[in-house]
Length: 408
Length: 80
Image (cartoon, rainbow over all chains, first blue to last red; front, side):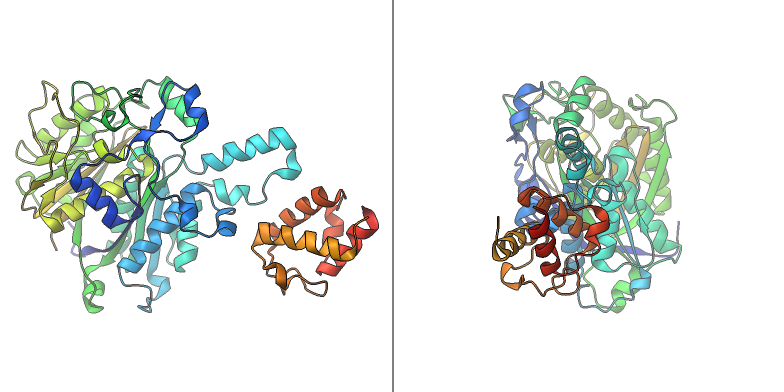
């Protein structure tokens, strides 16, 4: 437990449900799905033809010439980060930029640029390859662009922990502020790799849903009919700030980031530990870090991606680390799985659940798994007083990250 | 054979596409970097697009001599 309080003062997102936080949150509370038949020609050649594509294309927000120099994952990271920055009231706050850091990652990075430029190299030769290729595909690109845009000078960090990346970015941001290295950290995750190669790779692992004829029903965490995750794209960002710094400038405070817990399974490169032992240890660490006990956590925004093994493992983990009392949900039932951005979007959903005293629904839970013995906010949003809540994120490689947010 | 005006207007199209330069700002005396704000990576794109558009080869050691739009027009006029 740290004696430095860290609060959330800004939120930003662009997702399959909306081009900003407000529209995304409205869609989540209404139980709308962002999953559809892919609007891309190549999809017809693959076994998986569905996905959760951005509701607002970044080219509608960022001018054309700038878009030429940005990978899609960088463009949407910038959009989310700038929204969060403005939301925090920091645009004209005169912040000391030597006290501003960035913690922003991606699960897969600039693969869209890599693959598209490789096509150009094969078809037209070296001369036609964009001179912007390297800064577009490097995995620190999104973090670096956010840092440049905001003028951050206390350090720019880019982590990669697959689908736990967005949550790990929050955890690192918390550490940076607690250790005194910065007063403000813009933290987030981004992912934009809807392309036939990653699709083929995930599809051949049998990790993705093939419910091509009912896209909006494909992401169905904990339901007996679940058959894999739904690939999505998007970005989310939080402004994390030392509490006394936020109070001194009269900032609006959404919630506290009270604790974080990170563990690794040491088990398998893609399979999660079926009993979620590493996940449970991460949850327990986060609760201890927040100075709380399991009894305090009344809501969990679960990782639950709609895969047969992972969903039920997490249930075991939640029961062991927290208990049987929390009301849980998986917003991935609506947003799809944003991979490296998932932990960022779901942190936002957890924070707004605390603010609005409401748990967003898990849609498509029509026929719950026989082993599901926790209370899920199925089908409809549920009113609930939430003093403290958890967000879980787990990633290929055995990364487990749990975050605890509390009411400020 | 394209005239100097035609080459200038062709370069203006490329500069707009690659670097967002307003075509009205493009004139022979303008410096790519100082007046039109074309950075070094975008200049590479301009050169590649100009090679294609005008059917010329612009070697890398020549690019550093092309300070102004007029320098590029003269080079293209002499070599295409």
